[in-house]
Image (cartoon, rainbow, N blue to C red; front, side):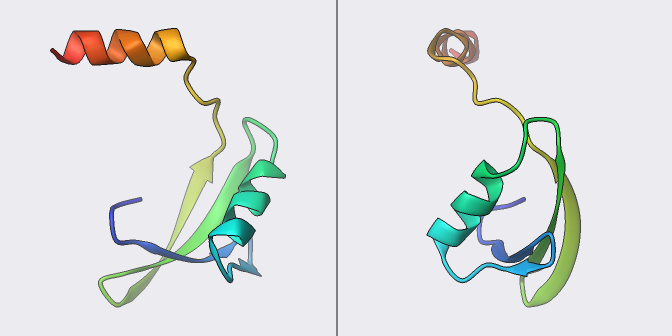
Length: 68
C-alpha cells in the first residue's frame, strides 16, 4: 500500500469508514491473507496482504537507533 491509497473492500466486503476497515483487519488471524481492493490515482487495484504482528516497543526503538 502507498500513501493516498483508498481501501474500498477487504475480502470482498465494502469498507465504509476507517472503523470498518480496522474491525475487518482485527477480526483476521495473524498469518492470514486478506484481499484488498484499492483505488490508487483513480485506478482500481487488488492486492494480497498478510496479517502480521505489530513490532514490540524494544524492536521499534532498535529500528529507530539503527536508522540514526
